[in-house]
Length: 128
Image (cartoon, rainbow, N blue to C red):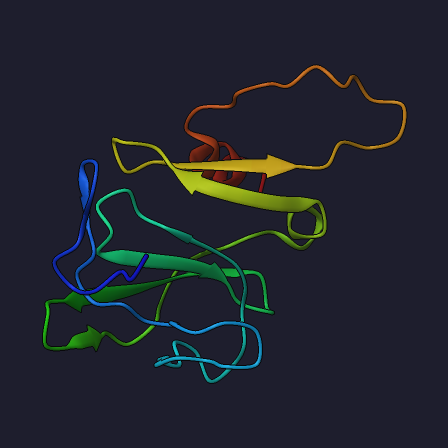
């Protein structure tokens, strides 16, 4: 199945195919960060890409796309994880209301029951 711009997949629409091609055959691609980054994830509206900078900062890049072009904004730092938290950070996502949800590895012997912590950026500020 070819996924050209304008192709609809359920409630989704292909705006501009990037990264098309198979193994060893990369398609068009755009560099987001010159400093590197890991654990990318999209804002739910598809207009913003988040990633973790090697320094522990959570970065945001605005993405505007239409059928003719893709415009990538300059990366901007949103916040920095404390070193002890960054070492245990395993991934994140953005809730529908725009708040971040993060997953951390627990310490040895700790409970394996998941816990949802709301407003955690404020809690991290209070611990400083």
